Length: 135
Length: 114
Image (tube, rainbow over all chains, first blue to last red; front, top):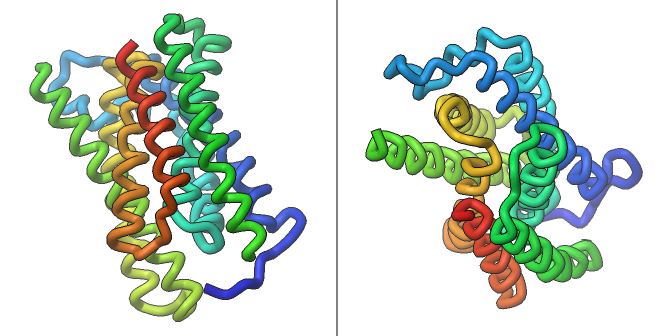
């Protein structure tokens, strides 16, 4: 691996933040699109194709494609074993967004899980910072 | 019904993990041999194909379950991806990284159980 790392807008960590915001947006859009078109009675609906009837699903797909390009860019510079656990910041942000926007409920146990994820993220952030020093 | 749900969730997870590993392999290749190299393009293409299948299954699952319930299942892929990145892609796995990854996984599983 080469040591050259772009700075500013092209900085992989900046792109990382954009990627996480993108994931939260497209997960909420997907749920909204899927819920609007749900027809679980049909057996083939496990493939979710009928969700494509909702424009929200298409908007989600556009965000996903953009997010995929950003993610591939991040993987060029950051090891998967560090980038992936850190990307799970979304596991905290998505339930909280569901709670805030979709009005889904969060139990005390679930809040406990969210707290564990945050502690784990802080622990993983250290190797990520060391990686940054090496780059 | 429940058996199908479990099977779909497992296939969804397996394709997701495989897709991530293929993406990373493709990006490593892109730095070594360039983007236009045939190997880079083929690994990336298979990755996108596998990820697309994973995405469709995700949509099917979303139509049946609450996002806040379903989504964290994906969290169990964290530990699998980290381990496979070390084994298959030969990435360096420190004890600290392992502990952090386990904590995140435990938290995500807890979220999905509650």
